[in-house]
Length: 364
Ligand code: IPM
Ligand code: MG
Image (cartoon, rainbow, N blue to C red; front, side, top):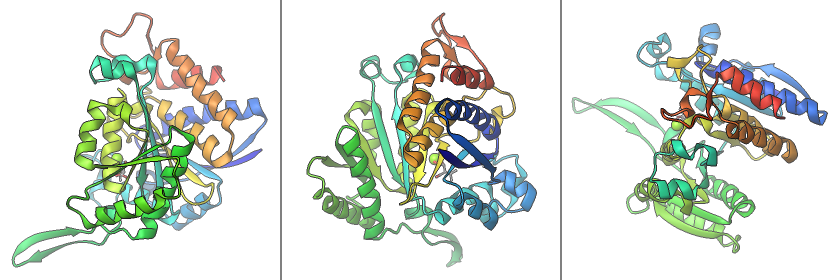
């Protein structure tokens, strides 16, 4: 099979982690007789440095012409980087939001899995970490507060800012359908998270999710308020299978879910539209403080590349192989700094970003 992949190395640790993911993908493609063609795409700070803007129409076009896009990370240190002297709509993150919107990537899948080998890094109570968990946050990605009207004005002499949280029923329905579809392939459970005791948008959300649920009698649906969900994620994450939620809640809950796995450096994500196309990126940011030091954890990006094979190319066997290789290398004790806690077992060995990529590629 020919795989046409767009590649956004991005900012901070982005280029280092993407290099390792490409290494592992190339190895996998070689083993199974696939051929990858890469198109380099500039986004975020890397694009500002060249074009003065975080996203150009050519890049949107190049992404559209690819079957899927693999991305590292976007953004820099807001206190020191000159990118943050620019107006908000010209900063790196604006490029990411714009490409999500331009490509219609409304469904953001963020799995959070506690790896047995990393249970020691889990900050939860021992009985909770021993039980393990495997959940997936289905975050709506192109609506809500992120894309509603916003302005800052002076009202009666007071600086006043407004952000708008808007959803129409179609936007809610299509993300709910994605959540139910994926729950069917997992453990058949959807927890829809909202703030229906306060927000109109959440009351509509709940009503539409209930309508969609009628078509999925085999999937168990429950509703949970977002504040309670934040609490339940640290109390008993094993209760969750698929968490379905709107954009802002999903942004916050997915960082929380990743932290309870022990390292945000392990979590992959996929942003999908209604076709097979997807943008695949680690859930973590660009970590400018450790950029260029070859110490970042490339596993989240490698697992995102595995998600790409699974969702955009239907190459399940190849994706399984990549995921198994990651588990194997962890089992053998290789750890990047972020997953090497003080007092780690003597069998663990600290390794660099590139060595982690090499080891995983070797296991394919
Ligand atoms: C994420 C990030 C982005 C978001 C930022 C960089 C705009 O936090 O992908 O979770 O808020 O969606
Ligand atoms: Mg976030």
